[in-house]
Length: 399
Image (cartoon, rainbow, N blue to C red; front, side):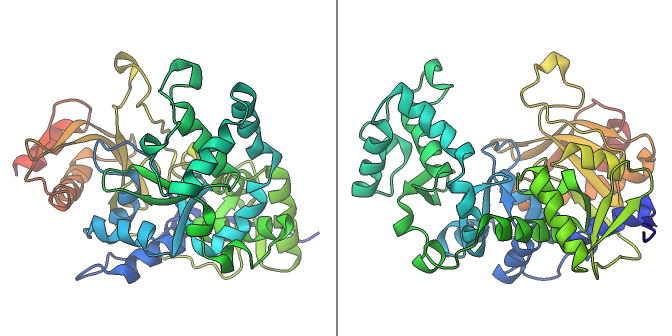
């Protein structure tokens, strides 16, 4: 049996950061559609979330890698160019239209039809009513449905119409036509959203789709365990493991050990290893760098949880906390809020990691905060005195 090569943890971090686009310097000059496409292609998908404390979640991964850019241009590209579609990838996500055939087996999976059966059991025939309405009058928002119903606790906190749309979307019977400027979804039938060449052609069976999604996840991550790769597109671990064995047999991937990791890791053949990573970026909670918390702990010794739904007295770091990447380490975290009425980016709390020197972290973090504030049209950065990094950050802000 061939010996498995060992990869030092520091090298694994550089591989991961390089694969996710943090090793290259940010472009100089105007950011255009080519740069934005490059980020989506590298990541394979962009996760969505409705939280808007700072800016929309899908805006941040592009800023982290590119610096300031036109957010309206990004939204036009993602929802109005025809190059991308929205579906359940890693949760709700925008993906290249070429991924649509890879998701067809998921749309027909019994797992995704479970919610349809729940809705049908509660309100027989309701899904057909909603689907007929969309087909006749779409694209429609949930508020424009003729029979959408009112929001109530009996429907898991959303209206029956919204829940029906989620179920129909999961099974591929409706599609997201666009997101409006205030992030409201317009729904339509797939025939009017997804080009026929992708909807009906390019047939891919479940096995081949699984293998290709594994390729894309590993390309995005650079180096990863079975659990990491399975989480990326929300796949089951057993078929992911089988796909990796197949790719190992053909020489596309290599099984390796990463120092300190319990599980075997996989490395795509020919993956670049940056000699140095000089990144400076605030990272969205929904960025692939940190969205799988066990991986963030293994790579960076960074214990991270989103505390939005934690009662305020029990929060450790704050409501909407972004990790701060400096060089090849996550060195701190800040709880941020864009106070648009006052034109201020509020740092409600700032903490540094135990391995990081606050006097080195604070000036770089303040520069990044100043840049993100300007990008968001805010004229000032205000540092509140909460967290062990706040004193040094306040000094950097005053300077």
